[in-house]
Length: 125
Image 1 (tube, rainbow, N blue to C red):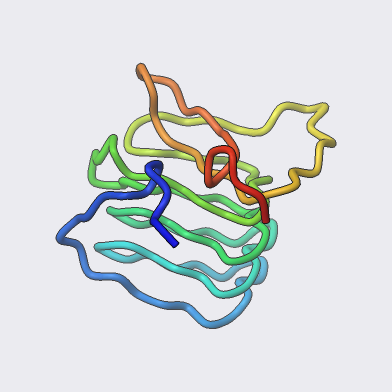
Image 2: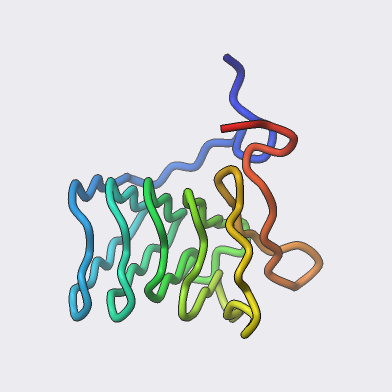
């Protein structure tokens, strides 16, 4: 299986693997990429200078590209963060966001704005 074009890239950053769900009050901060095997609950926070990948639901605060890296991405099975930041760009979900995606989602900066789309594009779970 080929890696989808949306994430077919390399970076020279180290990656940390967190094998647990993050609960309210817990945080992970890392100079590199962060992969979480679990959910990130409201009140929890993830900060990385690289990408953030959540193999679960992202409901807390997430900041990818914390050192100003506009090419960083956030990928999760479901993106419902209370706040989403990539580099110096900040976003939050709309108040009426009740849609459950049928596949994973990716957030990235395009033309200076954070966009969220299906991941992989055109793929199925």
